[in-house]
Length: 635
Image (cartoon, rainbow, N blue to C red; front, side):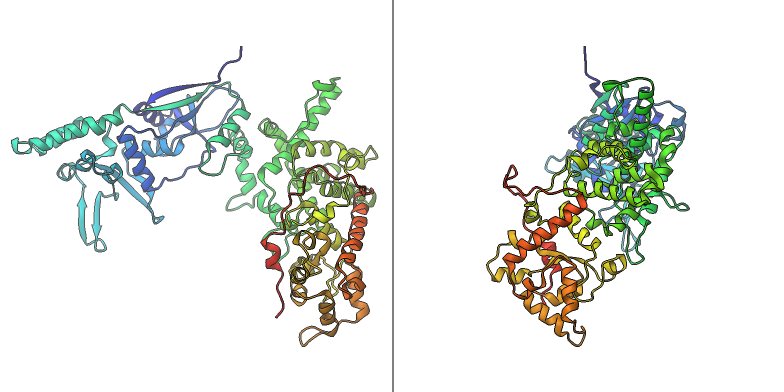
């Protein structure tokens, strides 16, 4: 019978902190150290002092399949490393570390002021304010510098001195680092305030002890303890759910911790260090133009890289199972999903890492060949993973014309079929299995054989973030589109040097003046790649007017011969006579057919041109503000 894999038990705060001190409770090594700010620490102390809840903790019992390398709670003595931890703290590190350092460690606490200055603080509770119900408890929590002395006037005047126990007694403030053991402090306090005349002060301290200090002594924290049988995937889900205050810990962080238990620094592989450039930087620099901050691979994530390796490893396992005679459901799946990443052995990572990195750098070369130069213009970030894995798998064979043509066809089918926007992991695995076989003469992969492009989709491509929209732009540049003004083709040098982007052919201003709806004129049919300077000349006037300006020229722009300009226009699949006559409707119809032919050529198949409408209504919004900002009206 299936049962719960966790228990919820309240545990005394004093015991929890003592377990942290002795190393019985530790942190998984990927839980990075950080410092809580002073105000949050004060708020935490105030909550515990009033016996208010501060949230549950979550721990994982050690000794199970999830073998993270442990790390002591920040500030715990090094002797704790000799202790094998019984549990690892998964959620609540900030709270427990802060409470441990403030209450049990007995040393000054490193923290950060509201002005983001790193400081060292001792914390106290103002006894009078803590007993006054009219005072907010957080106002009763005091932080003083490392020498326990506060100064003003640039350090010349002392405003608070708590540097000895006697001065603490005199100021009626209690050190938070002694909330579990008040007897000695109380004895000193009673001696300091002896005599009948100070009886009220001694009674006040006893009230403070009952109302405040005992809340620390008897405070219990709910702890959700995951037992040692908890799976890696479950632990990953836990982190995704509980780490809402910052960056969720993904599969890479957990694999990093798993590999660390075997002595391998996966984080160093990816990010490098002071002396070594990490893989992330190497990929970001791949084919990076000299005047650009990052190359086309700059957004490849660490989990993307692990996914590509996982595709190789899981395919190898499947092939081994096939050789052993297994069939059907007995065969392990080829996968790059989260569970597959968590199950990726260190030796498999080492086996494929160099090969996969080369595959990614080849992917950058492939994308540049398709005139995709910027991350902003990349149709699908997610399609880079199978692309890199396939290129790594086939090696130099992809540089042969016949093989490259098939690979290009697969890529454009993925883009114009808009297949990498959902169910990405299963699509990637299927393509990794099918495409290399196809390149060697096998059957068409499902991404190619099952994809259909609808001709009416061109009318609804309006969003700059749409994969098909970006793909259309790249296809035009690949086919040799020339800038209206300079006549230059858009290789990577011209692309970056001239600040090329997608702009309207019939300008927005003119279209609006003619009563044409944005849903029509913002379509990709009315867009094409142009340089910034050319778009500035175009402005918001009728095409017939800006064509006349280009042909006439001015003091900064030479005149362009009519025949040359018409050649430039035709390279964008634009009929010059329709622009000269400002014939918008005819232009849209003719250019739609031209663009459709270009897509059909790229996909290697005819598009659907029938009348059967696609299910659902068009939900794609009009062009966003970015496009408007890119179009500058000429003065």
